[in-house]
Image (cartoon, rainbow, N blue to C red; front, top):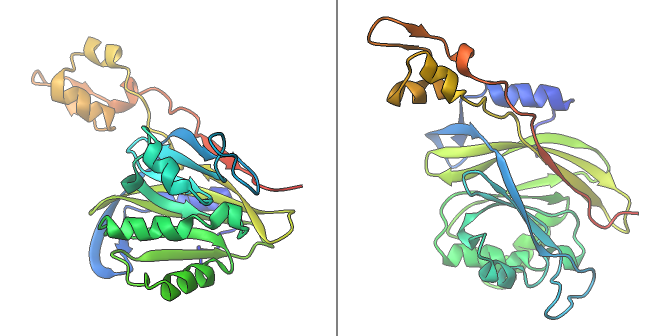
Length: 262
């Protein structure tokens, strides 16, 4: 289950205070944490209970981060085909799957996608988020179809769909680095337990005013150090403070996904 933290502000502060996480599968493994920056949204399917052949696939969309990781919201039947047709999203870049509810048009594609990721040799853990019952459904299908032995661990996060939840999730972008993002999940009114999701950035980096930095004498590596917030001392002893050449951070961004609600 996700950590129980009462407010969005508290969990954002807690997440930003963290410098590393430990893997559940290797207590000695230290992984560098970076804050996810949302880049784009791609719709893989917008149909309702039935696909419209050649026009609209079953429900699914992918939010892509600046480092190329994909956060999939819903995975209706045929989603794999849409991924393979896509020129923007690689199936190997899917780094988390979040299911709004367990009606088939929103989740029947997840079994095949999980299996394909295993066939492709995925190693990194994959967070799988959704209402209570998701784990039983997925593990039952994989077991009965002979696919329970996966090449990677699935990290199940089941949510009580009668309550709101605030938590963070980590996207494994390399063997030693994860991107962390914020999730607010809230119950929706539908014919079965359903969650709406707000996917948000924890923070955004301040931008370097390169013109101002160069006017003070910074060049080359000094510009790079200032960009990441480090003060630099030039060869002539001049000290340039990062705070003097960094612009205010842009406002944090979020994507809200509300599927099948009244």
